[in-house]
Amino acid sequence: MSILSLFAGPGGFDQGAAILGLTEKHIGYDIDPDACATARAAGFARTQADVRSLNPDDFQDVKTVIITSPCPTLSAAGKGTGRKGKDRQTVIDGISAFGDLNREVGDPAEYHAAIESVEDQRTALLLENIRWALHLPNVTTVICENVPGARDYWWEIAAELVMNRWMSVHVLEVQSEDLRVASNRKRVFLVACKDRMPDLGYLPLRGGVHMPRFDQAPYDLVPVASVFGETTMAQALGWPTGERVNTRGNRRTSGGNEFSADRPAWCLTGKARTWKRVSDGSTLTPAEAGLLNGFPRDYPWTGSSRTSIFQRIADVVSPVVSAAILGIALGIEWEPMVADYLDRIYRTSPTWEQTDLFDLAA
Image (cartoon, rainbow, N blue to C red; front, top):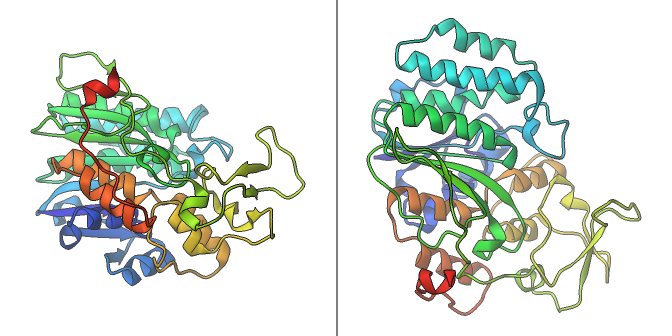
């Protein structure tokens, strides 16, 4: 029962699977040679391929698929063409058309027209989420991940899965620092299970929607307080307290150009390669940037340039978050394993302790 990762990148979900002891069951595909090289160097199975060229029928033994389609057109840092306008509506229509086609009430031309008419093909990659969710022959679990700008697409896909009688579909927003990762990173996941209701357990949520049955309307999930505590940037990197980080030199933005290292770092972007510690002007190494995103310090980041390496570190999902999501989707008791992993990479004393969620809510 393999776990298939599409657009698998340098290993965010691979490392998450390793935290849960699932490495041997995890296979991944990605088109980027540097991302593939990094994953292989870390010991993970990676095949370089364009996901659009793969046939779901060739993966008969896969029951869990993870789809992390790259989509910079959804990012708040870009032009946002995937979040508004013609491309957004075209892909939304394409998702609906594919769902209709799967129920044999639609026209195949509608789906293909949606792909062909999108101006930026990176936005069209979002249609791979619905294609694999509905066409993998024996799939029972689907996990989709992207930036918050994908939320509307996940809701549309969730609706199609509910229409196809999936038992449980959640759209969840998770922030990595709520799981004791040493940097701020917000991601939105679609977690769908065909034949079970997952236990959200200790996952700290910032919001979401749940559609467990065909005839039930969506409702908001109530956030649960984190039981994991916090790791500051200084703690993760072994810095003394009182350090500050400059992100933009002398340039000023509405959000400022410095932050205190005595809290989780700002969200890493490709430009984190130029961040400087104010006290001595030193810049982050790839190992340090990866550590801030929840990877081991010795993770083998490889690439043609420092710029490309930092961009991959910025784009990849934190393995801590991916382990939590995988554990929830597959019914694995993930909390102690994630806490132990955090203790090891951040060199802290064991912190996990079973806590009554009703007490936390109170």
